Length: 111
Length: 116
Image (cartoon, rainbow over all chains, first blue to last red; front, top):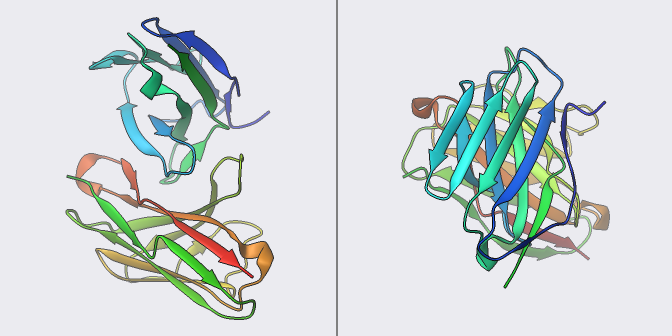
């Protein structure tokens, strides 16, 4: 089992719809969770981080964390073609300081 | 805020030469920086963790004598690829951890290395 798992996609979403991305992790003691967006040929850019169970909203993005079920998700509302990218879930495990990345989910927003 | 720069953005070199890549945190102090490598259509692979004033911690399988890391100040870490070969051609990305913002890491724009 991979430490951080994501569906590789592509996740095809019509413009204006909600894109829902999921991520599961294996280390139950993980404390910090991050979503990064990576455009082709570019480095990752931070979208959101979340530490507590529940929802966290920032603009069109909502991160949801459920530590009991060991999953974290990202919702993108009103999806735009510019949201087409690979979304990376990353976790900092207990007593660690480095990010463990999932393989990423490729999202395609079609006009 | 939280800007990380890398230099150079592109480098082409001959096999056998050494290449130095700089990573700077421009508006915050980073006691810890990380170096990643990414091959086409693959995910990021952590190479090493760089701590200011101490030796870097390398991930399993990464040759520390080939990939020299120096983190001499709170805003600068360098990665030197020694005696580069074509198989070292990759996208090298650094990240810096903003200690003042919990454990958030911010990535530099990356350096594309092509070894001929």
